[in-house]
Amino acid sequence: MKNQRHLKLMTAEGEVRGAMDDNLFVFRGLPYAAPPVGALRWRPPQPMARWQGVRDAIQWGNACWQNREYCINVGGGDPGVFSEDCLYLNIWTPDITPSRPLPVMVWLHGGGFTLGAGSLPPYNGRYLAGRGVVVVTLNYRLGHLGFFAHPALDSEYPEGKTVNNFALLDQIAALQWIQRNIPAFGGDRHNVTLFGESSGARSILSLYCSPLAQGLFNKGIVQSAYSLPDVERRQALNNGIALAKHFGLENATAEELRRLPAEAFWSLGGELATQPVPIVGDTLLPRSMLATFRAGQQQRLPLIIGSNSDEASVLDYFGIDVTRIIREMRAQRPLIYRLVKWLYDIHDDTLLGRALARDMAFSALTTLVVQAQHDVGMPGWRYWFDYVSEHARDSYPHGSWHGSEIPYVFNTLSQLADVSNQSPANAADDAFARNLSAYWIAFARDASEFTHTLPGELPWPAWHPGDDLTLAFGEGGKGGLRLKRNFMQARMRLCRLMMHSQVRLS
Image (tube, rainbow, N blue to C red; front, side, top):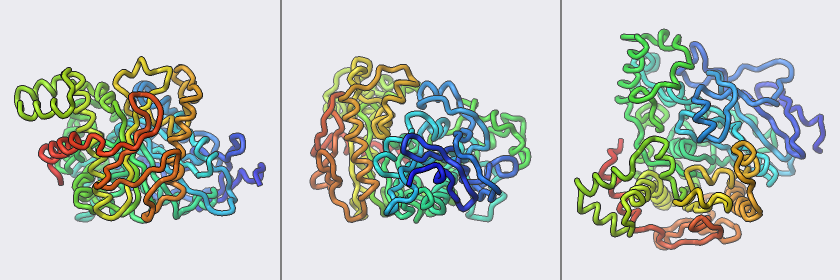
């Protein structure tokens, strides 16, 4: 029964009080680990101490320190209050006493590992929960607080047990919390799906490769992960030393580093900025993500992976000149330039650079991963998102931007319009969102290592090299679902060869 007395639940850490959102139960700002402050900065997340009485879970938890304006402009909204005390999660559930445990979907937000929060409007779990799943969103440490290496900190660990990827350890701690507590919220701890976009998607791929994440989730949905190589630990150590010197700390001690104010890190740019990828070589990620998937040593779990038709839109924010890349290729590697131009049949350098950058940075990784899944006997599904809201098609001439699929996955188009002053979604947009989210829900509910086809308006077969099928959500910005055979196959082969020759695997 759904009544007020069910708003109180007992977790392993203590009793919590949530709220109702129509007929859904919502719990906000639940701590999943101790605050990583003071002596706990740059340490693995520690267990949360039990509390006495009832803890209210009706307000969002703090977000990690970041650039508020940047998050509002490109990250999906205002992340709220900033604090180093930021390890909180949120839960939407349709029933805390279901007849059988409900599938759990855990969202890992994107933002280049430097911005974002699980509380942002596009990530509202109300619609998905209303379709019979338990939705979890979470915050984790960002920027230098989430990824950092320095000799003084490394010396605190035994040989071979160094930790540098604190953000990924936060995500693992949240998954451990879910394993302990999600049954109290009606969820099935044995059916946990990770889904995430951009750096959230890259996090999922890293967790597929981490020995510390085994047994904590059952499948993953990877939206617009990028193929940038992980940072070598040697380089990360040099970066940490340079950062300490920037703050006047020669031969810094761990205590001196931990006394630096948390708000001093997020504004650092240039060579002092963090990279939007994890650090390879610590306990959590002993081998790079790309090398692990190439070797077929990832966790053997089902996976959906895909990207959008205009992923190059995100490169504009990083000041990457795609036209210059093509012109340099024409001058320095003329044979490759002619081959690229022939394969793409695009004769404008700017448009050609945009397409090639998209495929090198995003599209090629999807083919690498589904091939790796097939090689280890695990199902993988590849998608291509090319839909643009009807009212916005004139503003998106190159296709669907990086992150554009998120409000369709969550079906939060109306909320996104409210916070960004966009035109409201129409009936076609809403129908498209329902179609896309239905596949995500079907995967979370039923997919296993034995699944060959996902149900939906158009049955979606798992990827196989003999068929090379990709499900296109939209085409040319317009709606519809299409199974594409050998989609961009020749381009993907070229991009993967270029990746292999230019990216040194660890």
